[in-house]
Every structure is written in C-alpha cells, then in structure tokens.
Length: 93
Image 1 (cartoon, rainbow, N blue to C red):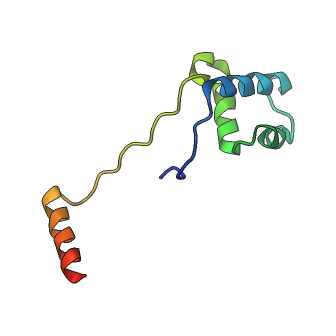
Image 2 (cartoon, rainbow, N blue to C red; image 1 turned 45 degrees about the vertical axis):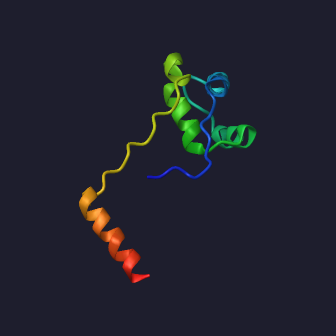
C-alpha cells in the first residue's frame, strides 16, 4: 500500500505526549467510549495512528521510534523487458 503523497510521520515527541494522554484517560487499561474520537479531533491524526500508539503504551522506547518505511515493491519485469516495453511505447507515439 502506497503512502499518501505528502503524508508526514507523527514526530516522536508528539507520539509520547499522545501515549501519556491516552494512559491518563484510561481506566483499568481500557479507554472509555468515544475517547479515540476526541483525541482524533484534538491532535488531528487518524484513528489507526492512535490505535498504534495505544498498542505501544507499555513500550516507551517503541513509541518514540520512527515508523518503518514500506518495503519497495518488486517488479515482474526484468530490466531488459522494461527497456523493450519502453521502446515500444515510444514507437507508438
């Protein structure tokens, strides 16, 4: 899955702040109803980002780490085949 063009990672300090905020709002290691929606509006980040921070709440070192990049996709064409296709496309124009 490609990342949205221009999408920024959440800075580590902001993730730590959100993790602390989430843990202060939790009761017996559970978030109350509608807490994620409130935090989503407050910090203007996605629900999945908030859930990822919540999962890492017990690992403070993990919250501060940058996100892993998506793996590069392999192509089904070899370099030779790709150059042949590029040559055919240029000839068609």
